[in-house]
Image (cartoon, rainbow, N blue to C red; front, side):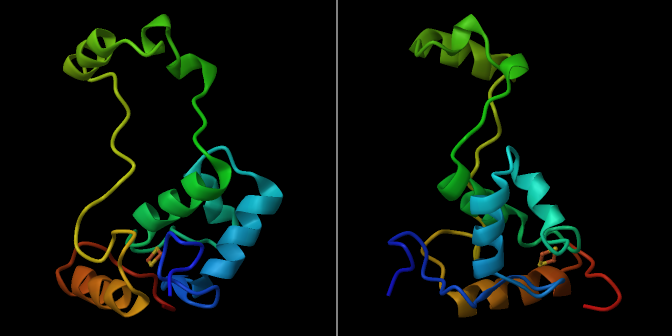
Length: 134
Ligand code: FES
Protein backbone atom coordinates (compact mmCIF):
# COMPACT_ATOMS: atom_id res chain seq x y z
CA UNK A 1 0.00 0.00 0.00
CA UNK A 2 1.30 3.41 -0.91
CA UNK A 3 1.97 5.80 1.89
CA UNK A 4 0.08 9.03 1.19
CA UNK A 5 -0.43 7.76 -2.32
CA UNK A 6 3.09 8.82 -3.16
CA UNK A 7 5.56 6.59 -1.44
CA UNK A 8 5.46 2.94 -0.49
CA UNK A 9 7.08 3.82 2.81
CA UNK A 10 5.37 3.55 6.16
CA UNK A 11 5.93 6.11 8.92
CA UNK A 12 8.38 3.92 10.84
CA UNK A 13 10.49 3.00 7.81
CA UNK A 14 14.01 4.35 7.96
CA UNK A 15 14.90 7.09 5.52
CA UNK A 16 18.35 8.03 6.83
CA UNK A 17 20.25 4.88 7.75
CA UNK A 18 23.33 6.71 8.97
CA UNK A 19 21.41 8.33 11.80
CA UNK A 20 18.42 5.95 12.01
CA UNK A 21 15.84 8.61 11.17
CA UNK A 22 12.39 7.29 10.22
CA UNK A 23 9.99 8.90 7.76
CA UNK A 24 7.68 9.89 10.62
CA UNK A 25 10.30 12.16 12.22
CA UNK A 26 11.25 13.80 8.95
CA UNK A 27 7.63 14.50 8.05
CA UNK A 28 6.89 15.89 11.51
CA UNK A 29 9.97 18.10 11.30
CA UNK A 30 8.85 19.42 7.90
CA UNK A 31 5.30 20.10 9.10
CA UNK A 32 6.38 21.84 12.30
CA UNK A 33 9.56 23.66 11.29
CA UNK A 34 8.63 24.29 7.63
CA UNK A 35 12.21 24.35 6.37
CA UNK A 36 12.64 26.41 3.20
CA UNK A 37 15.36 24.08 1.90
CA UNK A 38 15.64 20.31 2.09
CA UNK A 39 19.16 20.69 3.47
CA UNK A 40 17.66 22.14 6.65
CA UNK A 41 16.26 18.70 7.40
CA UNK A 42 19.74 17.98 8.73
CA UNK A 43 18.54 19.78 11.87
CA UNK A 44 16.31 16.73 12.38
CA UNK A 45 18.63 14.23 14.06
CA UNK A 46 21.37 14.96 11.48
CA UNK A 47 19.44 13.27 8.67
CA UNK A 48 21.33 13.47 5.41
CA UNK A 49 24.70 14.45 6.89
CA UNK A 50 26.36 11.04 6.62
CA UNK A 51 26.88 9.06 3.44
CA UNK A 52 24.47 11.16 1.40
CA UNK A 53 22.32 8.29 0.17
CA UNK A 54 19.08 9.65 1.60
CA UNK A 55 19.44 13.22 0.33
CA UNK A 56 17.33 12.74 -2.85
CA UNK A 57 14.62 11.15 -0.71
CA UNK A 58 14.81 14.01 1.80
CA UNK A 59 14.32 16.42 -1.11
CA UNK A 60 11.23 14.54 -2.25
CA UNK A 61 9.74 14.49 1.23
CA UNK A 62 10.52 18.18 1.65
CA UNK A 63 8.96 19.04 -1.70
CA UNK A 64 5.85 16.99 -0.92
CA UNK A 65 5.27 18.59 2.48
CA UNK A 66 6.76 22.06 2.17
CA UNK A 67 6.40 22.66 -1.55
CA UNK A 68 9.02 24.47 -3.57
CA UNK A 69 10.53 27.68 -2.40
CA UNK A 70 12.32 29.93 -4.83
CA UNK A 71 14.17 32.65 -2.98
CA UNK A 72 13.76 36.10 -4.52
CA UNK A 73 17.34 36.11 -5.75
CA UNK A 74 16.69 33.08 -7.94
CA UNK A 75 13.57 34.55 -9.48
CA UNK A 76 13.71 36.72 -12.53
CA UNK A 77 11.28 38.13 -15.06
CA UNK A 78 12.36 35.21 -17.25
CA UNK A 79 10.60 32.86 -14.83
CA UNK A 80 7.21 34.01 -16.08
CA UNK A 81 6.13 30.86 -17.95
CA UNK A 82 7.82 31.53 -21.25
CA UNK A 83 8.99 28.42 -23.07
CA UNK A 84 11.64 30.40 -24.89
CA UNK A 85 12.90 31.85 -21.64
CA UNK A 86 13.04 28.35 -20.16
CA UNK A 87 15.13 27.18 -23.11
CA UNK A 88 17.37 30.23 -22.79
CA UNK A 89 17.82 29.68 -19.08
CA UNK A 90 18.58 26.02 -19.66
CA UNK A 91 21.19 26.86 -22.27
CA UNK A 92 22.72 29.38 -19.91
CA UNK A 93 22.78 26.85 -17.06
CA UNK A 94 20.34 28.95 -15.02
CA UNK A 95 17.73 26.29 -14.39
CA UNK A 96 17.54 24.42 -11.13
CA UNK A 97 18.87 20.88 -11.09
CA UNK A 98 16.14 18.26 -11.34
CA UNK A 99 14.63 17.40 -7.98
CA UNK A 100 14.44 13.80 -9.02
CA UNK A 101 17.36 11.40 -8.92
CA UNK A 102 16.46 8.41 -11.03
CA UNK A 103 19.21 6.09 -9.86
CA UNK A 104 17.89 2.72 -8.67
CA UNK A 105 16.53 2.76 -5.16
CA UNK A 106 15.68 6.45 -5.23
CA UNK A 107 12.43 6.68 -7.12
CA UNK A 108 9.04 7.31 -5.55
CA UNK A 109 7.80 3.85 -6.45
CA UNK A 110 10.67 2.22 -4.59
CA UNK A 111 9.71 0.04 -1.69
CA UNK A 112 11.61 0.28 1.60
CA UNK A 113 13.48 -2.99 1.05
CA UNK A 114 14.67 -1.81 -2.37
CA UNK A 115 15.69 1.50 -0.85
CA UNK A 116 17.73 -0.29 1.85
CA UNK A 117 19.37 -2.59 -0.73
CA UNK A 118 20.22 0.43 -2.85
CA UNK A 119 21.91 2.07 0.09
CA UNK A 120 23.99 -1.04 0.80
CA UNK A 121 25.10 -1.13 -2.84
CA UNK A 122 25.85 2.60 -2.72
CA UNK A 123 28.11 2.13 0.30
CA UNK A 124 29.74 -1.00 -1.15
CA UNK A 125 30.51 0.93 -4.33
CA UNK A 126 32.30 3.54 -2.25
CA UNK A 127 29.96 6.35 -3.29
CA UNK A 128 29.37 7.49 0.27
CA UNK A 129 30.98 6.93 3.62
CA UNK A 130 28.72 6.41 6.61
CA UNK A 131 29.75 7.98 9.91
CA UNK A 132 31.75 5.82 12.33
CA UNK A 133 28.81 4.94 14.58
CA UNK A 134 26.43 4.00 11.74
S1 FES B 1 21.54 7.36 4.80
FE1 FES B 1 21.22 9.44 5.32
S2 FES B 1 23.21 10.28 5.29
FE2 FES B 1 23.55 8.16 4.97
